[in-house]
Image (cartoon, rainbow, N blue to C red; front, side, top):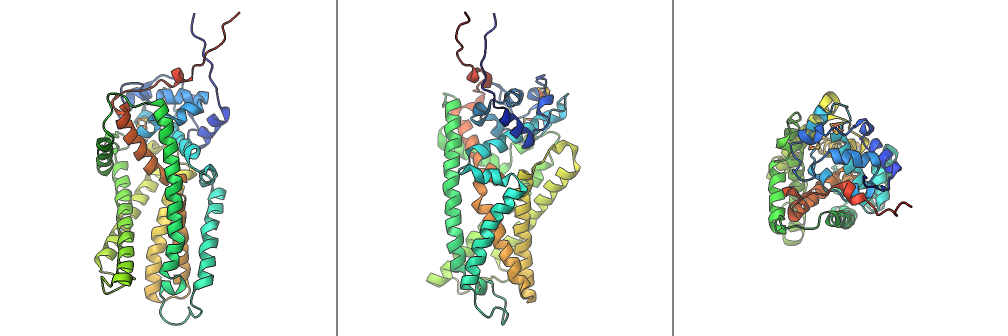
Amino acid sequence: MSDRVLVNADLKFVQDVMKAGGGDLNKCYQCSTCTVACPLTPEGAPFPRKEMISAQWGIKDKLIKNMDPWLCFHCNDCQDQCPRGAKPGDVMAAIRNMVIAEISVPSFISKATASLSGSIGLLLIPMIIIAAVIFAVKEPNLAEGQIIFSRMLPVTFIDLIFVPTALFALFTGFLSIKKLIGGLKEAYPPGPDGEPLGEALINVLKDIMTHKDFKECGINAPRNIAHMALFYGMIGLAITTACVVVIHYGNLFFGWFGYDTPLPFFHPVKLLGNISALAAVTGIFLIAGRRMTSDIIGNTVFFEWMLITDILLIIVTGILAQVIRVAGIYPLAYIVYYCHLVFVFFLFAYAPHSKMGHMFYRTAALVYSRYSGRSKSVGVNLLEMTKQELPEKT
Ligand code: SF4
Ligand code: SF4
């Protein structure tokens, strides 16, 4: 006689996964071709077939604690081979989006970032805060004299807005990662095959810097170049911002540099910023172009579009603000700079709740994967984890 299994199905979760990009989930008939095709799955408890059935059955609690959606890099080799068009790569991406919605704290922000109306609501917060500070501190005669952005919003007040914003993102990000790792720990207790934590961290950082996992992709290999351009462009922009802060405060408090911001066009930091912006924009256009024209990319939902749109808006308004300022066009330069600050706030404040969060969650999960030994094939059977004792039949 076969075992009886009680499954706590969450049908709303099934609908949510379908809305989050896994719309073809129910076409899956469990043939396992996808699992054979996947270049990244470990041998023990391989994916994505088991995630397909878990998502169809709405086994939400276990999927939230499942490591494997984070080991998937959405290369779509499985999707290409699926005989039913069930799009397993998209389902894995949708599960990741759902996990971000579940673990991020507070969760209402991540729910808002998944829709246009919610994102507009979130955008209103920096619009109001930044406008209120500008009207409180701006020089009264902005129309006269040179256009200097600090006349509208002094750097000290920018810091008073953005330092608490960064702290909010760090704090909520920390809580969310703690929740993610807590779930993974329950499902994958550290085993004898695991690497020491420091070694796991270094190996994951090496893999990320070289995009090792992206390079395993078969049909979707060009995505590696696009993602790398965006990734290194963003790192360059982050370094540029850090240098600008050091130059400004180093000069203000210690007289280190003998000059202040804005920096001249050929200053090395300015050049780094402009080259990084160019790399990031190139990456964004390659990603967007492929999403719109290639059949093998699969579904892209608003949540995913929002990240590259916001980064693009930050870069475009940042460059335009420089150009319009030099051209002396008042008040357009100030308006564009204000928009730039609003988009930057949106990216940083909501990073743990948006698609941007995948950078940190995936990194944390990959480190834990090596630490626990999952990367060396120690896996769990989601359905086994779901079995519950049933009373004996009478
Ligand atoms: S997703 Fe497609 S390939 Fe994978 S088990 Fe289902 S039907 Fe088969
Ligand atoms: S999208 Fe790629 S990495 Fe993800 S399950 Fe499919 S084949 Fe594996």
